[in-house]
Image (cartoon, rainbow, N blue to C red; front, top):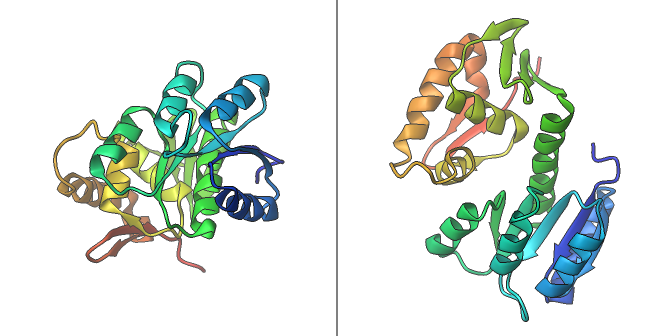
Length: 228
């Protein structure tokens, strides 16, 4: 799906960079490495064809937050933050800076690659106006429209965002917290019940296709199209 997308991997640990690079190269991504924040910024401003940045938080010279802040002044390029911390304050800071995804170490490289692919699919669809189809649900990201078996479906803004997030992450178990982070971007300071309410409305509007949104008890949801 990536047509040789380029990913910049920024981490002061060479072992970690190699691990991430090997998995991305296997999936046919081009990978550029940087060992610190200053080098990352140099590469970012020098090369115009980077599609996504994987950025470690704890680094010498300039940490990930500073790098992210600097890049966000000029670009909306997707950024995935890697951190050894699981502090909610850090996570909040990340999303306030416009981080697209937040992954705590240690992590599964396969999961990281899946996140990279999902984010790039989303940004590519928005750019090209490409439509995503999942079991008769057609999503037009650029037009912000959803069709159900060819019929236009009336969804609220948040319902559309939620359905988009589900479809782009098909087959991935998504916690309520992750959904809140990505769909509400922390601009909603209520609790996770708001997600359950939106899911209920979404299922109702999708009719029989509402069954594609599976509940994972005690965790969250997963979007999965029934195989014929």
